[in-house]
Image (tube, rainbow, N blue to C red; front, top):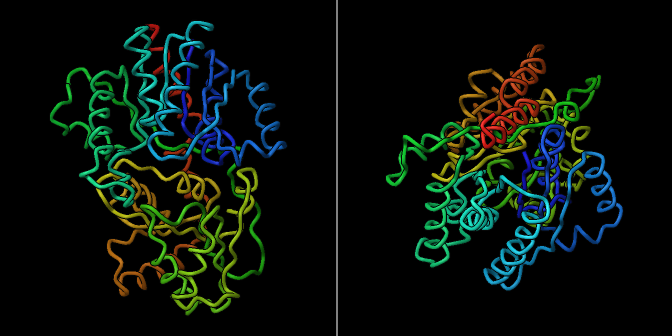
Length: 395
């Protein structure tokens, strides 16, 4: 199949490399892939990173067309990017004979939908979650905002016109089928979670004598809740006074430090760092356990946090909360994590003690790795996408 993949996320960001490039590198062995992405100027200015990604694209035989991402003014800049992306997509369709357009999330889907309307190309809507509702739950938009109503209207069009809809979770797919406008008989929904390249993320040799390290990766704001992380770490310090909290984050260091200080976490007990995607497997392997919490709101039923698969692939159990995607069934069903049902002090204390016990289990690393293979295998994800692509050709 000749596929145009459109991503509003940049390939020079960790998310783009892990959740777009890793898949496409596998898919390009069987399909002709053209990738249209939007790159942030701050990322594009890093010549070594930019040249490195170009080399990876060439090696994978992916035709990469990077456009500049614009942030300001809000909304107007997004529609400007959409217009430029649409014009580029028309050229790519005519130049390379594109027959299927795979759109990652809502902004990219608007371009893909217009191509379907004009050229009858096949439209694959990779939802990545309920994006409009995520922005409500993150406090970015209000339900009264016109941009929210427009986006929900577009969501309806995407779901009604897509040849295939991809959900990250079974919980999200179940919610989709409850939408009153859904044609249940004709809508094709596939569940493909955020997979992990387990050749990169894998267990390394355990250290001998070291302090207990609790690890956090990624963003801490929006629909993430960081205050309970500080609370749980303080409880861990009561068990292991020499414990460390290692945090890998980009752009939120002042906020994180403020939360930890106001919560009474000693400055010498935490390290706040930034790392490239390629460095993360080694960093995660230094953790005894991972931790993160997400607001248990409607939109997050469709979420599959990338960090969960990365932790498990490295043999690291984690502590998180219920009400988000399929996490509870995976962690509890496979015995590879602890799930908080609420954020009361008593529940947090019990959960931290359970996590410590779990980390002491001699078979925990193997169970985590097996769970990652079962639920977050990149090879299985690539095969699933390939089946969707081939379906467009009747194969």
